Length: 303
Image 1: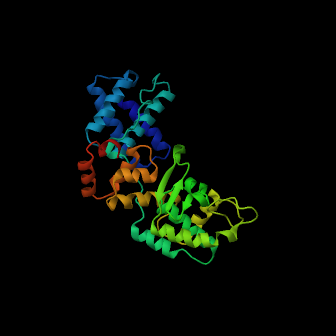
Image 2: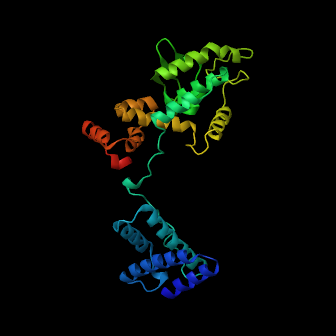
Image 3: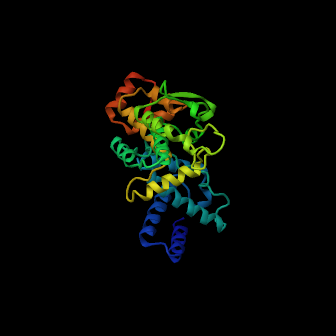
């Protein structure tokens, strides 16, 4: 079995694999070989799927991090693929292996913009004309109202109840409606924009809240161009995209002590587990408070 490992590594070296990578591959394959010998395997053709499963479990028990396990398993899968391609084994016992994460290894959500970064961004946006005012209102809808981009683009003027200070999302994800309170920043931005919105209308008014310079409902492509310009003006700073604004307000609300079920309704999440992901980005004392108040929430189960 070791002879075939050496043959495989010699070929990889001839193909130009770096010395450091060769050492890593050697260590990984030798580790597998030692494990298989303890199970009585003397030829690679004797290795079964259960043997590989047991080996993967052993890696997990050793406490190796996800990325370390991932690198080891990929190296072994490549070796078994080499054996299979050369007819040394009939079935590849490693093909089925899933490189699963443990619950606490799931990647953290993207870090949010801080409250200060969000305030600086809004303050930096120009206010020269109606298009600028529309852009500010749009960013506020994505941040202050936590809307998905598709939800913001689908809004009509009638959905912004300025008197009651409510934004009505008539068809959220899954077709579910929800009402969202209009925060001060959003209210002020909409007041400014709506005063001049009519100047964008060309012909019959389609009723869309956010209008393009051609009088049509604002498109996804138009907003993408806006964020691209923003990012070009912010070299070296966080890359802005629509979901980052929604993501940031969710964390800001939780940090401020908002009830997680309120945040769930605010964002239009069908499942509480989806909202719970954001708890991983708030201080531990806030998480502890949620756990005490709602003991059914298991952060390790879905974080």
